[in-house]
Length: 245
Image 1 (cartoon, one colour):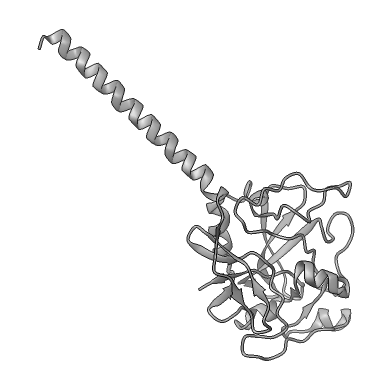
Image 2 (cartoon, rainbow, N blue to C red; image 1 turned 45 degrees about the horizontal axis):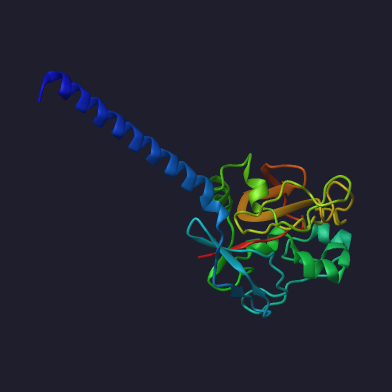
């Protein structure tokens, strides 16, 4: 083979190698972009009250796709409820509430628990646990990070925009189905209105303490793509999602 032919051959081989690498990189990027667009159903889980929850596998981890609504700890002990605003704001034991004391909200959104209930370690069904701060961050990072994970977590139904119509920034591509359940404030009242009420906002406790008197939580708003990480008073009533051990 002549020197000129050899150089031509090397150029062809080099070009082919570069093309193969480019295609491989594109394929890997495409896989990364699409991996959270194909929810994998989990096996489900049932709590001590007999409530059955659908689940989803995300990054090899099984999560509930519904908010917890048990009235008992997994040892059978009843969780206190029906607390007045004054008692709710001052208690240091686990308790739950239903948004606006309306059974329709219980069915739609599940219970709102204070962090003292979470901290018992008995709130989740056996073999499961309330998601920790690290669990939440791992989930969010897998979905692209705090700034863009919101729509991928939000249910495609239930979220409202400023005018009361359906929110546009929901894809639920992860299958997590986050619901806009609002919350109960640490001093007792339920959070309502066109910015923070049901349909517009949700807060999820983590099982991780920030420090007296607060614990870590995640917040998702109707008009935002971001998932906010913050800490808040343990007497607040937030939604709870559980993850399989």
